[in-house]
Length: 264
Image 1 (cartoon, one colour):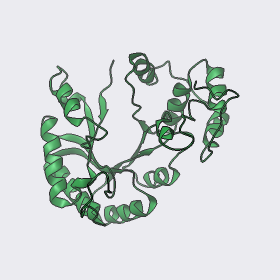
Image 2: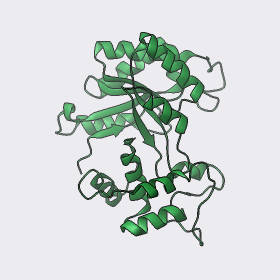
Image 3: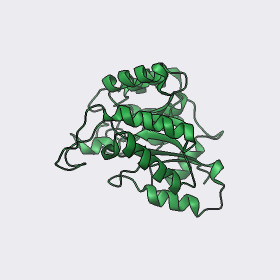
């Protein structure tokens, strides 16, 4: 379909980095035409572990990855076991390892972080300003009801940084009360979609692209994949300033459903 950017991770609990790599290496598309972002598992925090993990991932992708992220700033019980898994600040040593991987060419573009809170981002900024390497990507969950504004603001303050949004279409809300996809049930988004003759996902992704975010929507539906990539062509819609304001006013709200609460 024309997608050339891949977002994956070493955390087999949620991703299949090995299968993504197998698909890429078995294809006829030259590696240099593809852009691969992957992430260090929280249990791999620490200089030596991150160095080893980064090189292992690079080998899977024919010698290098384009961007290497720290998936989380720390680990937790249930993900990394019941033992001594928590080492405060270990991510800082991992960041040093990512910079060394960049210098050796194992990471082509640079490093970044995912799911970092404001305090950790402040410390990351201090490291970067003191010669610890450029931050090229901040990745976080962004949809109209959860916009990760501190993370966006931090990225905007760094010239080298691109903000990357994941879970754009409301999937994260299925894991918390009211356990419904409030994005696809939104009255505001439905109204905007209807005025453009498109779907709610098209409105949400168009909003993020107009805000100059990198977007990595996940789908297993071929029709949805085609709709998503069409947003990069001349068929994309342009939201008005008023529509963007209405979308951003949903930040922090718990619900904005239509009368029936149906998913649209």
